[in-house]
Structure formats: C-alpha cells, structure tokens
Length: 152
Image (cartoon, rainbow, N blue to C red):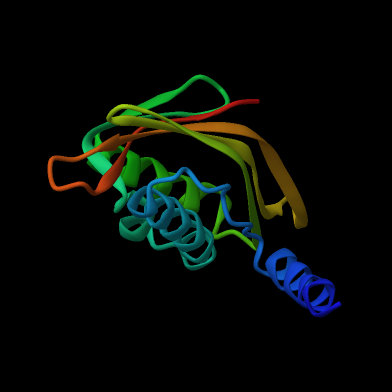
C-alpha cells in the first residue's frame, strides 16, 4: 500500500514539472546525463538561457529540427535557440517524455516525445513530436549529445 501511495503523490509531481525520468540504460553516468540535460532544458527554455540548452552538446554536434533545418556545432545550436527566443519568446511550458534508452558501445540512443508551448498571435501554441537523441561516451566516461533530431 505504501508504494501505491507514493506513486499517487510522485506521478502528479512529474506531470507538473513537465519531465519524466528516462528508463534506465544500465549506465548510471548516462542516466544522470540524460536526466540533467532534459530537466535543465525545460528550465532553460522558460528562462531563455541558450548556454544551458547547448551545454550537453559536443562541439561538433548536429541538431535537426522538425522542418529538416540543421544547426551544426554547439555554437550554432546555441545561436539557433537564441533566434527562436527572439522570434517566439521564451517557453510558457515544456514537456519531455523519454520512452527508451539503448546503449550500443560508445553510443546511446534516447527517444521519446517532447513539446514546447509559446505565445503565437497572442495565444498559447503548443508544438511537439517525437525526438531521437544520440549520446556519445567521452574518453573520461561522461556522455555528451552528438545528434539531436526532432521529428514533425
């Protein structure tokens, strides 16, 4: 009974934050990197903090947007987000639902669903869809984002 009570309390807290923990990959450092990047992304999107959004990316990472546009390199990814904030403003709400994580050697694949709500024409507008993030293990054992693809 105690576990059911905890679930009833914990699940609404996750829903309120807009972030659910990814399933375990079996690599604690990867799990922490994913959780940190996803939770900090939501906070940074609401605050317009582009450096925080770009922090988990490798210097030569590639971000592919839902329209097929690409930002190549950490600096370009940060600039892309800066431009989005200029056009659309900061996020009113965010949500990431990681579905799975699979590790294959020095690469890991995280996929799930994400969305962002911003103001558009004076009204809240939500955009979202599936995503795939490819993580690369670094020589020191840390994990960084190599590719991030947001699908329409």
